[in-house]
Image 1 (cartoon, rainbow, N blue to C red):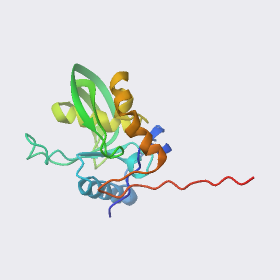
Image 2: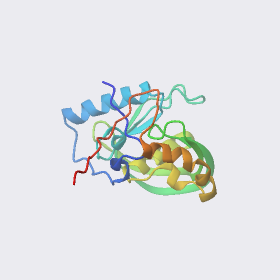
Image 3: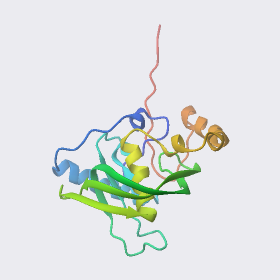
Length: 186
């Protein structure tokens, strides 16, 4: 099932997600739907808040990225970054901001403690595209978007694009969540 993706102006993207206490059939189904939704939108990472679930869960699949064709999809639950090394700058985009791109500086290597799809605790070091995508998706779990990490001068260059999201006139090649409007009568 393809889930609609929440966009920039949706409140859920600005909230800190709650940890999962375990995995049940509902969580397993959500993981499956998140992978389907991410692939349908031609994404390489997706966090649960992006599909309307404020829990600390993300999925990623780098197999469509050059230099990573043999990589296996990954489920990350309750991630916690333990250590950071180095920095690099790279252009990022986001399924919650269709069409918007911008340069973001992030640590080049991270050590991550997390639980996998079987809720087993893991500790691993990630670099390259893995480190980049994991940090981007973990930001979503903390209510942070990549545009929040951009240099102010670069952010000003895309402000008009961001304002379009607030106006509600957003086009994407995949289903997006349409917030309901509140009509005030008085």
